[in-house]
Length: 380
Image (cartoon, rainbow, N blue to C red; front, side, top):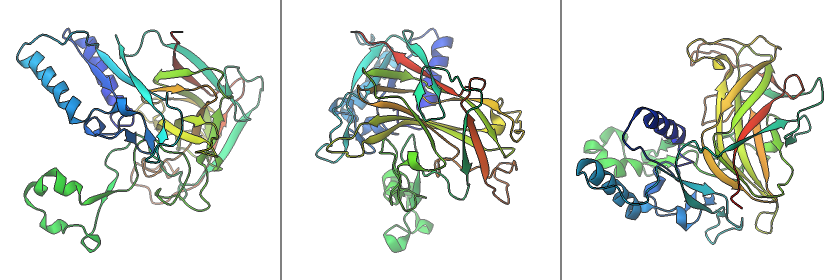
């Protein structure tokens, strides 16, 4: 699903298999978190994507059976089955459901391929005033700077997460881990002895006591001094973004190595149910500067010297409705989803100290930070 930690790998695996194999290859992308195709609810985190998004075992098991019938028994493929099926989120009315979740909605759609060939790519430029639009900056010297403190990282609030659990100690009702039943009494027994540290899925991007590392006064993430938020004007029409958003950031730092994060957010306007609006995370990722050009040939930064880094977010499929804003958040941490960079350049996992880094995102005509957005044209 789009809120699963393996969505990027699944989509890329399909692309590679489809290119190499002559046999049919299929891809199904739901709105789910990890394992969500077996779930019976339509909420993924705090976001309800509609009853149409629900599979559960009533659909999941027949899907698997049909696959084995075709490939093991040689039975014919089901009629009218497209190679790609995806759930496009975002067509709900934005009210609060009876269970207290955001009604984000969505719908299933068949596609002939992935990535979608009819995609139109639009470049949106980041500006010093926090705006995000299709116009290149006219300023020759423009940038935004923040201090990244590894001791005070940006807290993880939902997202594509798997396995963010901790073991419940016996004194709090958990079983004794030194006396685990045979084969952990199957997965169910072990799972019931775990509690979630950070919830996956879609959530309002605001700090609170339920989020690890969040501190008072609980702020909207965009209000943190170490988060740069770039957003469009309210949209005049619905816009569907489906595929991989790619950020091209011109950055510099006082450190020889640091991290940069990018997050795509659907900004709901204020409403009766959500007076401050709802800032829905769709997808995010991170890039360590030393690996900006190669995973096998790391290269440190020269402090103060601008370089371009390319950050590809994992796939998503979402309709940004009229009146909403498209927002890109840039920072240098997302903890505990990602380990915090100590900013020292030490070998990964071997640092003995952490230092603050003053990080800069450049927004000038020469160093134009931007995002490339995959837009599916309207059929109207």
